[in-house]
Length: 131
Image (cartoon, rainbow, N blue to C red):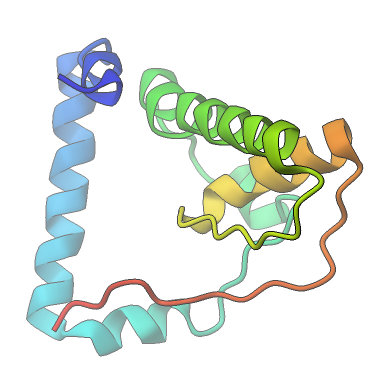
């Protein structure tokens, strides 16, 4: 069992069921309407380093779900990037972080706070599509 699976099991059963039900519903909708639906839905959306008013006032995920799906994953991701920085800071390397946009806030905040990194460019790449 992975560490994520172990942590996921600490989320109350009703919250896990609700989260998985939502994910399955969105996935079914995407399959039914095709990938163009997702592209249209995301066309005018953005994710900045700070939340906007809509995000501030939207309902939160249940705390256990947010802790396991966002906070703990962010901590592991940022810790891994800190370790990579410590081991390879003197090497000219390129690092790709393949995570959802919501996790990038933790990355940019963590790396700028701890190591003085600044974002000067970024590329969004599609890593998978549903046909």
